[in-house]
Length: 106
Length: 106
Length: 106
Length: 106
Image (cartoon, rainbow over all chains, first blue to last red; front, side, top):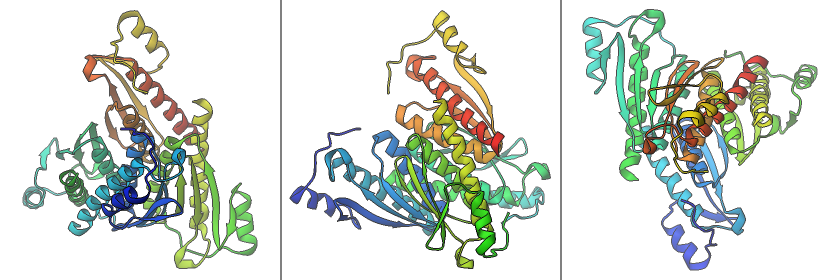
């Protein structure tokens, strides 16, 4: 699953961001704030992301307050945003869509 | 959140089971096997159930092999199935519906 | 487990802090940075704290980067630090001592 | 981290078991029952094992009832016990020793 940490910049990075609604660049990192129905949904999402992080050996910076999680992603070795950050951001969105499906249902 | 552990039986139990598709009685316990897209989804679901279990102070018997989780619920103090088991079963279904929404999307 | 959110201040707060090595007050909150052997130990610790948080219905603000977790505790309803924050801080220390025992052993 | 799934048998397997107190063979699997101070400690331990399982891409069969977790390990592809099961069993013991340190302290 590990891909070479090639730095994304310029047009390539812009195109990648087009597919990641709500994500923006800040301080050289991909950033987003997620909001869930409650702490249960937020931490369940964090557990899934943590499992993926260990699998990818690529870990987010994140901050949680009850139902909110703020995330910042970058690849330390590459000094910026790489494909691995894009992959993790996409997975976070996918897991969050699921958690929201639950909130609507619950 | 804690409700008095009143034993459910007969008609009351049958009606409760009608609202819980896939659950059946076995050995005096509510039982179901859940199947997820992968271990990540299965354990993310378990994390949510674990958080609820601590909140309710009511814990499942469960067995996990990769993407499958078999569950048995009963209320030890009451010697059978109570409203707390029904509530936990309904929450498990709700969380699992979410995880499946993710599997479809992913 | 829920105790009335009585605000701690002055001498009572100072005495409570004496029993919580490494914790300090900042912005009206109890603060500490924990450092673990790796992400596995850090997130395992977070899982335990999350379970306790649901049980107490009292949730931390926390920020994780790989093996580090920064925590801030306060009781929103009371507008400051209460016995519930002290209890949670003590539990966090207890869980962290365990995780460190593992680091030493591993 | 992934090692080739070479089947362990005979003397090699016996020697490996000597270093894993409490583990025994049953049905071609490594088996052990862990007992923790409470559900919090048990599930915190499961979270650590789950993170390792994703990292190793090697998953246990396990059953949890409150403070107890029964585990069975084998390598499906190899049709028996391999080095990966031994590694996971050793990690489980290490994580459990930590959780017990907490129970003693707590």
